[in-house]
Every structure is written in C-alpha cells, then in structure tokens.
Length: 461
Ligand SMILES: *Cc1c(COP(=O)(O)O)cnc(C)c1O
Image 1: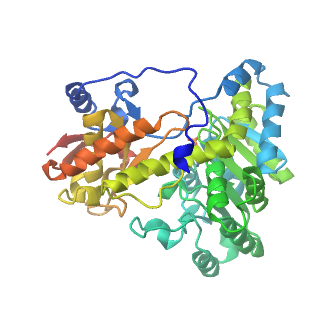
Image 2 (image 1 turned 30 degrees about the vertical axis):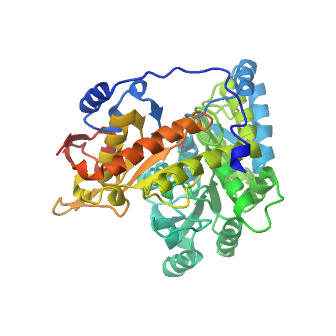
C-alpha cells in the first residue's frame, strides 16, 4: 500500500529554490515571449520541462565520480561500466557515447539505407532526424489504442501493431525494410510500456524476414517494472531478469543514459553482433572518442555504472512510477482530463478538453503552460498546436495536429509528493476558472516549422 512506504531515500544535500511572486513571473513570461523554453531555469520553482539529464545522483554515484580515471584507451572506469551494462542488457559489446542521439547516429549509419523503411512503435525524434538525413523513411506502427488519449486503460499502449508491420512488409517487400526499432517505454505517447509478449512477437516476425531488431532503451527499467506489474508470468521475476529477456530479442540496443541511467549526460550503443560492434567502434573513434570512453569523462562512466544499477532497483522503481501515478490521480480527482493510464515519466493533460472555449488555432495547451507558470512557477511543456503544427507546402496554411497536450515531466528522485500537490492544486484552481482564460497568438516562429516551439514567441489575445 502506497501510504505505508514513501521515497526509498532521504535527502542529504539540498538545492534551495528561488521563490518568486506572481508579478515577477508575469514579467518573466513576457520577457520569454510566453514560451517556457525561453524562461531561465532559475526563475522556475518546479521544473517539469523534461526528465532528461535532470535526475538527482545518489551518494554512491557522487563518490564513484572521484574514482573515475583519465578517460582514454583501456581506462579502468570503462570496464566498470561495461560490466554494469552487460549485467543489465545481457549483451557482450558496449560502446559508450556522449548522448543517446550519438548512439542513434551510429545505429542509423549501420542499419539504415536510403530509400528503405524503418519500422517502429513511435520513433523518437533524434532517430527520425538521423533517418531523414540519410533518406530512410521512419514508419510509426504503434497500436491504435496508443494514439487515442481518450481510449482509456490499456496496460501496454506502447505495443507495436503486428498487423500493420506485416502489411508494410507485404506491400513494400521485406528487402525494403532495413530495421525494426522498439522504443521502451514509448516516449512518443507519454512513456507507455511495451509488453514482453509484443517484443517477442515483433522479434519473431522480423526474424522470419531477416530484418534486424534494435531496442531504443532510454527507459528500459521503467518498462521492465511495468512488465513485472502488469504482464502475466512476470510477477516473480527480478527487474534484471526482465531486462535480460527484453534484450534477448534484439541484436542491438541504443540508450540515452540521461533517463534511466540516473546521470546527467551519456549514451550507450550495445550489441551482440561482433561485426556491428567493430563498425560502431570505427564510427565512435571518428565522432565520439576512443572505444573505451566514447566522448565521456572517466568519472561520468563511473557514475553511469552505478546509476544503471540503482535505476533497476525495485523499491526505487515503485516510488518512481507511483509518484507519476499519484500526480495523475490527483488531477483526475479534480476532473482534469489527462491521458490514461499515466506512463513512466510524466502526466499529460489534454489542452483541448481543459480549455474547451479556446480553439486549437489559439494554442490551448500553450495557454495552460503559461497559466501554470504564472500561478505557481511550475514549468511544463506544450506538445500540441505549436510543437506539432505543420504548414501546407502549397498554400502555407496551418495544419493542426491530432495531439493537443501539455506534458508534465517528473525528474527522477528530485521532487517530493508535496511538489506534486502544488502542481495538482494549481491546475485545479486554473480548471475551476477555465472560462476566464482566452487564447494566444503566435507572433514569432523560426524558419523550420518542426523546430518552432523552441524559439517561438506569443502574445495573449
Ligand atoms: C532522450 C531520448 C533519445 C536521445 O537521447 P539524448 O541523450 O537526449 O541525445 C533517444 N531516444 C529516446 C527514446 C529518448 O528518450
């Protein structure tokens, strides 16, 4: 029972937060063009912009930093990391990289070819960018329930749709499919998990056609925990038994260590294929650093070696997923429309259903981001009309996306449930007063529409 356990850690060092007034926050918003990306982090009270690279490290990680040796050929720290990774992934070959996207780059160069298709549940944007630069077509084939925010409970909304996959193979020919990438948990729809059964079946189907399988594993431990909690036959397996089985179905895995690695920077390219490893080593030497450091300092390799193990601890994972769930439940109690079930790393609020009187062309989720910051200094992020809006290539007219959400990302081991209460109470207050809010107008956007949310400027209507 949740009320009988709390955070499985105590706080040994604190970072005081700057407290601001509503007037100050209004001024900050104005100066930032009403764009959360342009706020200064120090003016934020509770920062829920991302869960990437924002984890708090443990005393063991901080002390491991001091053991880090100079990072070059054969450094001691690398072998510690290698051992930790092999233990969790069950694969022999480990190439560190400086971030997840560098592993994506190496993986794309090895597995993708121009004019071919890469199947995924929902491809992450850094892979998508790498694929598109190479001329490979990324195809998203998550199950339909995974795309419908109002479809209610499904335990594994990150699953890949086997029928869609078979159809694409039949239509294009297996020789046109270069790779299948399963992202665990599925970041694109809110950290929804993928079941072991699905990973096994996708892998079997791919194998039948000789298509290699890659797992994008930024949140591998959260996915394993959901499998243990929700999937028949896994209740008595340990997290590492589950991660080892997950990776037994792929040839290669990429990872952004900035999530379940519980560190602030780093990435991994892990494989069981010796030839693939040799190619990855070559590419790492050119782009990242020597094989045994891949652009990371020895101390960062040490902290990651420890962080990966802590990330697989069941008490930690219970606290982690329950905190996200707790915030979701608090919002639901107040009648606030969220995407269900809550995923591994955040809560998504439906901006259109929250502000039914603000049309999508007036950025309801962005308005909610601003209101949440204005009232309580909480920074969330819009995933809606601004982030995913497109332009008709002929007429230049706006095309509004299906998704209209505000994401509240929860950093690992950083905030307490009382911080969650502040977020819930503030959103409850805004929701009660939802009729008083009007929309926004986009007054500045950069030349690349798909990147406009990072620099956009708005005005209140
Ligand atoms: C964060 C992330 C990446 C990219 O990793 P970076 O460390 O930010 O470069 C790739 N895939 C997934 C699923 C991610 O969540």
